[in-house]
Length: 320
Image (cartoon, rainbow, N blue to C red):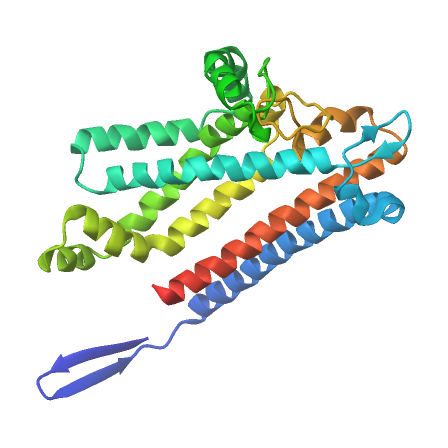
């Protein structure tokens, strides 16, 4: 440790040697950290190997055609995961598209002096409590409260816009649209919390400089604060997208779990996670391998999202 003491025109350097106990503690902490990181990496590799080995039979049989076939029939031993892949991607992208403006807007309201302090604290507390609600409880709420409440609105969309393929089916109960909305509720706390923390980390001097040159509040927010916090917000959004891709229980309870493909978001659908949860307990033979293949595809999707998150955060950090 080097201590610099300024005394007019000169500086005095005092060197303090580290004790053997301090060096031993540092070395022990380093070894423990390396060990923990190795264990995590080993677990991920083991999971990947198990899923890949279980899916190898279906990979050899179907190849990439497995991802574009919508038929899933254990009787005829024909399997394709396009319906589940479509439902997974659609629900995830649609939910993050809705949660992004809601979450970032809520974070701006919490961090900036737009609302009274007590109200901002209350909103922040409610967001944190929302994140603590179990997914099965949200699924029950979606079945008994949200879906019946939304059905007249969704029926109106079908009546007026049935010529649109995504609204071509009359809503009769659980479906993709309610699943999208329950995912919005589940990932909204992630987007809001990380966006709030990113905005709070923006130096106060940037705010003062923006106001000092005559910028209005919203000009400062959109042209100074958001660009400064964009890397953290992007990381939070992609983290929420990963959560949406892998969510199981709440989506399984409200999406309808239909293996028949339909473009409409008003029709029952399926996701990879829901299909695994519903069928793995009773699967046997080649169906197990096909489910493993679907699980492997889900792992690849989440891996791509994580790699994209790292790349975007790095690029945005360098840019802003």
